[in-house]
Length: 180
Length: 145
Image 1 (cartoon, each protein chain N blue to C red):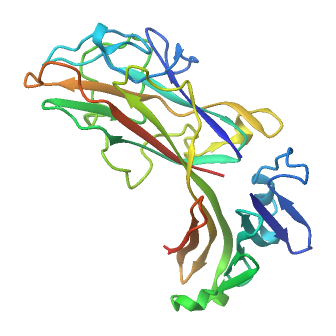
Image 2 (cartoon, helix red, strand yellow):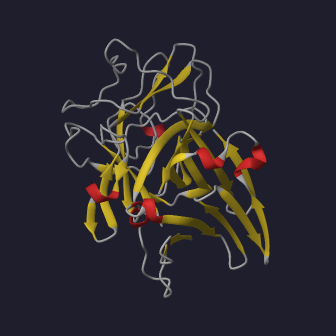
């Protein structure tokens, strides 16, 4: 009936197989590897990148399955020279996040985050056969699942030298999924 | 709340009569070949039902029933459909913010976009889908894929 969604951030050397480091209360980018950071305290210089953010979606509640997860930027305009890169299926490993541009995956550059609802799912759910989160595989008590995660997602704010001084605009990231 | 009726007359619904005990939809899927109808009971007076024997949708509002049959659309012969399966899911959205001082809530409660109710089946070597998109307010739209 009801699903509760958390975002779990993976900082420092916490890798894909760990349970992460923090419940993310914001997706604020900055010049440090820190969850829930205050952007004004960790500004990103024009022409450089914010530290990459590695996040998984945590689903808990009563459901039979969750599928068709789509994520995009639904609100908030970019400023000149600003972009947010996003991958819904990324391998973090145990290295700490850096401000280096997210490496390409299999020769394919990490793209800009979608600015409209994608036509198909773009967040991988970790059942690699069906790409469906099944409650039965994560059941913690009868009818209830508390520990289901998406695959690792990677985000990074990148800027060019043409980016103006001052804060960027607030943005909204939307996630939709089909619950049964 | 969903309610499933099976060919033997038995029923399952999302919550029992006390309203406290939830039944997962997986229990319906476990008996999918026995399924006769599946309903969304939006309010006490408004419901939507799909009947799997002939693909009929029934929209009930304050005691008035409107039936929509498969052949109303003249796209396919409902009696030639095989492997009929239910479509039921709830599309939900959660929003997160970037750049906000106060940031997100730790736990975000999703908002319902719509409930999908209908069927999919095989027809002339294709998989076809017909379903209603039911808004939380009770508006509905029929979709064919």
